[in-house]
Image (cartoon, rainbow, N blue to C red):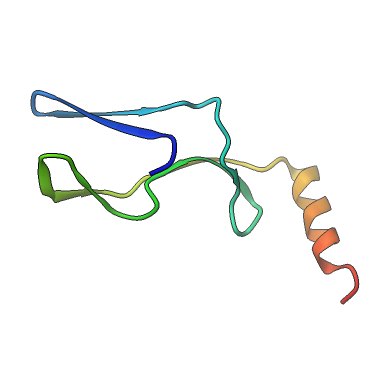
Length: 75
């Protein structure tokens, strides 16, 4: 997991994410990843309960266009 903390408070799962962090671009370049579990993970103490979580924001249009153009140069 990256930038995600799980905490059990009684029967409640509390998920904490720092929304100011950026982990980098998604593979498609369409979004900036803020946090991810990296697939489905078990909840501590409830191994049969799974969480799969991705937190992201869309890339700004001008950044995406520039990245796309740069990736097609020389082809």
